[in-house]
Image (cartoon, rainbow, N blue to C red; front, side):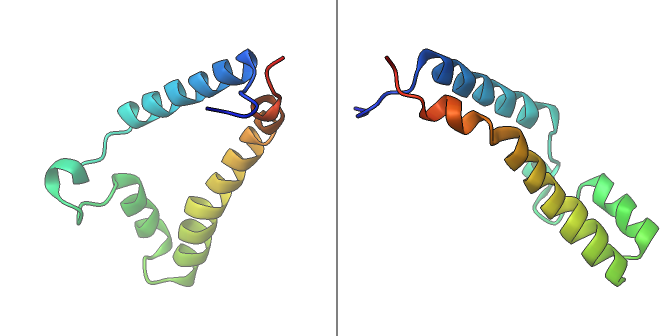
Length: 91
């Protein structure tokens, strides 16, 4: 199936990533699954009340930077070292 299958260490790391993803999705239930897509997470409602939803501070600081850019960078830098583990071929 693979030309160079991943090492055992890579398989274990990938399995742990899958377990973490499952745990994360179970521990953060979203009301939208049962109440509809128009239901917003209470944390975002709180943040928009504190900064003002129509305000540029909300859209740039909270929405763009706080909810999109920072989490993306955190995941990227947390998983960047795993590239060498996943790409090392089995011996």
